[in-house]
Length: 310
Image (cartoon, rainbow, N blue to C red; front, side):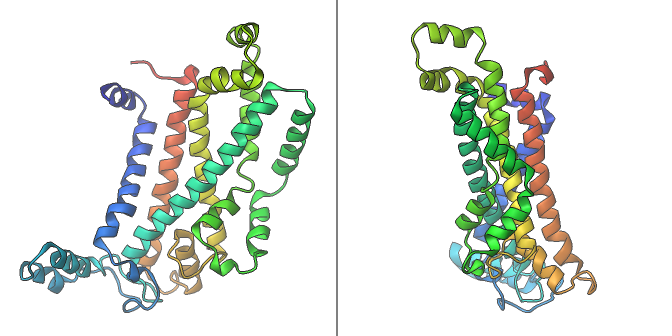
């Protein structure tokens, strides 16, 4: 553990990225203890209220008995602290739940994308020149030349009822094109490694192709795979924000992208509702910044040429 913190001090991008990401994870998990989930949905409270603190509810905390009653009073006191939107949603509850949902979507898209990309990239890279490799590279070339976001819009809008789309469905839709770039990148890495001495020795020892991939190549590329996962999660978050910002998905849910859709729909800019603009945009900026910094930091771990020394 001491070695990890020592390395993080030498790799500030990784430290800041993981720190911000951990803060957002705590905000979306521990934060659920301090909000009422119903406040994240329409008509939960009065609309268009600026940020404030219910001091009356806060003062009553000393009068009630029991932890449960005190927590309920605290929830009431914090309820309007981020203000409300024009639908009567409490923005604190919306951001707590929306951050968690958006992270889940990004994680689903990232895991699916890097999972498919890893399998295709390792197999096609190790067996470069085979029929399988030709098919994979041809499909990847076609997918990468197509506008990915347009494909996501067409797929998401062609569903029978996109308004009923849940977190899992959104994550799977965003992952439709998330595998192509990891496949190409991993394939190039495998092709550069398969001629190295340790792979040749593995072949001479009688190891099969799948054994070499699993026991020799994959462990050596594990840091690169983790870095690629961070990039895939970033892409999944961006794709989900784009779709939701266009109103594609369940508009009743407090997703971060859907919060942006509603503030545009109700002209929050023209009405001077700064809290409705700054708060979700600030959370989105922090989320994307954390994933970007984490990716930069992991790239240093995966690439010895740019690795800092003590």
